[in-house]
Image 1 (spheres, rainbow, N blue to C red):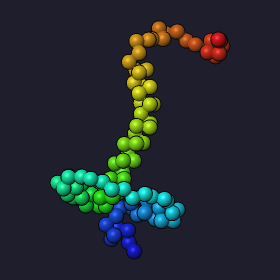
Image 2: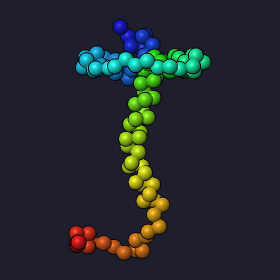
Image 3: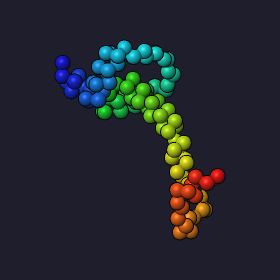
Amino acid sequence: MDPAGAGRNQLDYFIMCAHTMCEVNMKNITLSIEEDVLQAGREYARQHNVSFNVLVRRLIEQTVVQKQNRWLDDTFSLMDRASVTSSDDRWNREDLYRV
């Protein structure tokens, strides 16, 4: 069967095959959602050649992964906002290891 013919892009097809071959233990959930939001979500998913289930799964994964990795962005942001300058001082290896 052709993945494109099944209405899935190659990545979705690969994920579907990987889940099937690896027997990933996915849990079913029940979701309450307004009818108009559900219809809009289904239409969006259809336009992007994915199932509504894949759309919801991706949105949850992106939200969780982004929050887990956000600490690094927050750290760099704090460094950018710090009012500290090196004042053209150069450090050498001995200075860095001095306690």
